[in-house]
Length: 326
Ligand code: HEM
Ligand SMILES: *[C@@H]1O[C@H](CO)[C@@H](O)[C@H](O)[C@H]1NC(C)=O
Ligand SMILES: *[C@@H]1O[C@H](CO)[C@@H](O)[C@H](O)[C@H]1NC(C)=O
Ligand SMILES: *[C@@H]1O[C@H](CO)[C@@H](O)[C@H](O)[C@H]1NC(C)=O
Ligand SMILES: *[C@@H]1O[C@H](CO)[C@@H](O)[C@H](O)[C@H]1NC(C)=O
View 1 (cartoon, protein in one colour):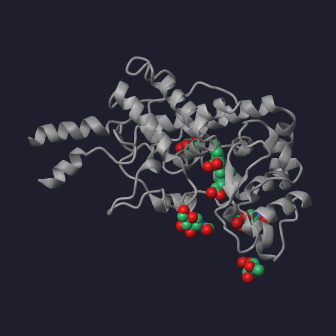
View 2 (cartoon, rainbow, N blue to C red):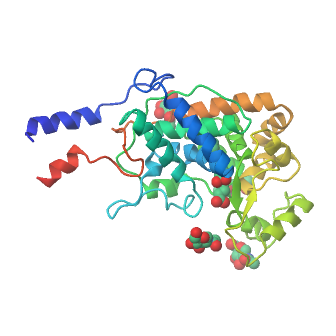
View 3 (tube, rainbow, N blue to C red):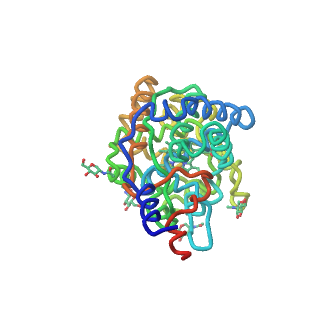
């Protein structure tokens, strides 16, 4: 290959991305959204929890250097990816659902729909298929060439986080207190591990005692599910209706039945309590705020160059790699 055509290839894959917009694939892959929805439906029928697990990808992808599917890259000898980062290891799951979506899309419109956009569509579909709101997503993202375990470790919040820490974290992404509370309502579906709540049940803030905000009957149930010295991979429901996207999560918080410390803290701290109360009483307001939050979070971009990956787990072979081989 001549140096000139190499340069051309480089430029072709590194031009800055255009603004995100609805209908981005209406000419190039008109069936894209219906294909994603179909595969998500199949995944839900196979294992209801898997769509909650996929929905979580949007948060863990978009907070770490923008929504660029960096999360989906497998580790390589020269790159520690995000899958084994603190918040993700032994926790993120159902990557195979994204693989299935990608395979189906590659058959119909090869090399067209980015993995980053698949995450955004699939997260929306998970909510809609669970009884939550449906909304139009903005598309046109590119997939990253790399991932950063270190950045994920530094950014993603612990289940022990309190509301003031979370308010601060979300504000760094221009997400408001209302966005934080509404987006936490994603825990209306899915499960968490005992590992994530052991400190809360037995040693909150090093006190040697449980979190006093836990309603006693609920705490008894969690103690049975997660005994000291037990298997910390056992999972419990994040709210009382873990397969239905509704405002039950907020009702549970008001009743002291939030699963994670980061959930219950939204009710115990005054800065977030009013939104928890509001959403517990008015599901319509929750849904509206949730959609706004998902759209804002989905707009986070790194501004770095990208590509449309063929396989969501590995970057396409790049001109830069070709260049290095010479
Ligand atoms: C506000 C800060 C947040 C914290 C500290 C947090 C933390 C966690 C933790 C610890 C788990 C359980 C993981 C495990 O035990 O293996 C979990 C599950 C989950 N999170 Fe979050 N999360 C937050 C916000 C979000 C947001 C913004 C979303 C999506 C919009 C989200 C979606 C989910 C879902 C759907 C699950 C269940 C996944 C499954 O069943 O596999 N979370 N989260
Ligand atoms: C909230 O968490 C932060 C960081 O862990 C900590 O520094 C702060 O003291 C906590 N705030 C309250 C009021 O507990
Ligand atoms: C937040 O908004 C400010 C001002 O509009 C902007 O400069 C900044 O880049 C935004 N930050 C993020 C993470 O989007
Ligand atoms: C509780 O946490 C504190 C501080 O992290 C620690 O010193 C103590 O050993 C813990 N207690 C138990 C019973 O694990
Ligand atoms: C959970 O299971 C994984 C294997 O899937 C294992 O590596 C890990 O040590 C277990 N974690 C806990 C907290 O028991």
